[in-house]
Length: 120
Image 1: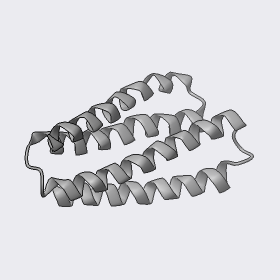
Image 2: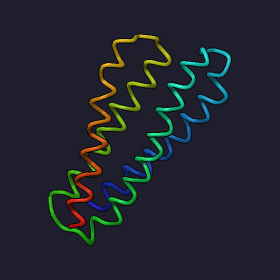
Image 3: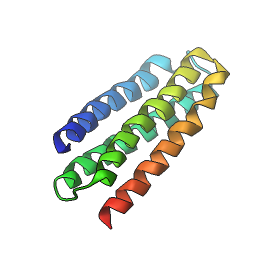
């Protein structure tokens, strides 16, 4: 699992940087300041949790158990649901996508909880 989460963290970090640059250079002036802020929030949490995936990868070799594996997959799900819904909301303006965002937030919280459980 450590290689899986290392790869997921590296890919997520790459995508986060690319989306950050796209937001800063490609969307400025095309989105309202409010929607640009929504996009930037998605990028911020995307990058935090790309780093969390790298931490999970580093710890997976030292901490056996389902909790560390669950943490990694919950971080992946959180990036997809939380950040992904914010990206789509900002770019499309479809406000119903905002209903998905809290599910991703719960996945992030559960991931951090699982990481703590794994440490115990």
